[in-house]
Image: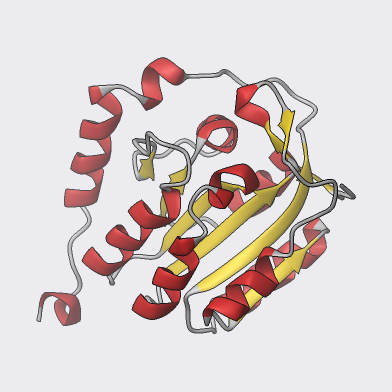
Length: 200
């Protein structure tokens, strides 16, 4: 697996583009995002692996006035590839699905995926009917894509080629599975007023 970006540097780059999006994040990426860019609008109550894209789609359809980001893992997405087809069919303009591809189930002891090569998730997305799809290996490429994304229609899928971060971040399982996390998110989401066009 050829990777060019430490995952936390990738997340730090995304944090510079963060303007209050709802972030649906899973496991290792979630823990790192919580440390790098803590915000009550981070949705951490995903539960089963593979469900991040489906939960994010529900949020995107329910709140079309808000931008939704998904921070998914390659192993996680492989458990629910059908969500790409569903995403293409629903076609929410406000959803970007980032896939952090490192070839392992990192949260489960760094067990390797059952393939020795990289997976072309961008091609899978395009084959599913999602036209905005990209594969990114470098931080500069990510910053450039993010700058252009603001002018594009969604949905979008971004295959980020990463490797493990060089820093150890707190593994806050007690928080991500807590009632506190769910209530904090509900309160923050309710506090974001709907736009007039959305209310209509």
